[in-house]
Length: 64
Image 1 (spheres, rainbow, N blue to C red):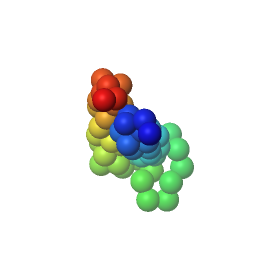
Image 2 (spheres, rainbow, N blue to C red):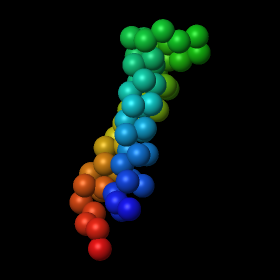
Image 3 (cartoon, rainbow, N blue to C red):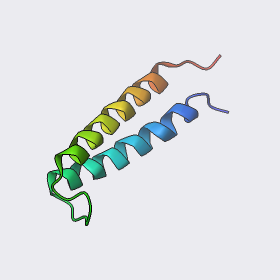
Image 4 (cartoon, rainbow, N blue to C red):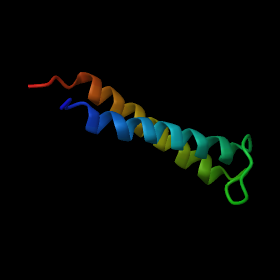
């Protein structure tokens, strides 16, 4: 089993879902609840940054 997989799967999910949240918060994607609300833009940006951090951590890990 690849030891990087437990970091990569949540990293990709965080980046994708965070990107969707950010785009909805910025008003670029339609949404009944999140459209044009800056708090969702901020939440999305935080999620994307966390996903990138996890992805970089997974890249730096070496299997033992």
